[in-house]
Image (cartoon, rainbow, N blue to C red; front, side, top):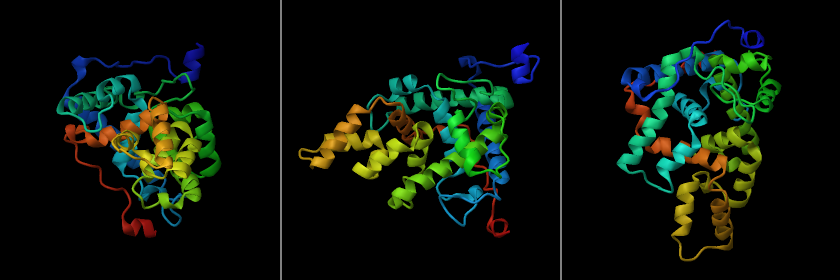
Length: 290
């Protein structure tokens, strides 16, 4: 009875992942579903101004495409141990690694395609992160405080359970963290590393990202590639030696593996595997002017 009241459900029917379900139709259904929800979330945020890009709407942030928001969701749900077992320390993925990584990402799309609005709706981890976008109460408070007119429920369970609401919170928090970090490190904007800095902060908070930018610049935001470049140098400056040691020490840290996931997904062919065409932007120039 307590669970029935908490989830507002008399019963939950859920399809767990099975390799027998790895079918192109379910992969495509999962990707289509997520992109539709992302489009809806952006549409509902078109009246909210971006804090990272003043004068722009959250619906049209130049730092994030719909596929970027999708990649953050997949990265959040992807098992880090399985990921590292596939890619190890490879800077460039082999054909087999590429295929295995795509398979790992596609199993998440299969779960979403099979369960749609119930996918990851009832999940939570040891850190208290809930739902499809893995939000904590701390992260949600940042969203509530900084985007009070976003229409995101003040009930944490409801805000994280409903997919459009959870994705709206994801969009807002990425924007907020990017604004905070870029305020101290303006070189970030326009660098092409914006989404990686914001995503790393989304995963583990902004302080580690600020530390890295202050001491080592932008390139560490691709940690595996940067470590490989530095390890191949016969001579390093003192700063590069410190950066290399920092990257080696933290190579198994959750946030660094998170960044590795994002870069590895971009290298792999998984986004195109389902054959689903990209969802068109929900905001055009005329609508933005309105």
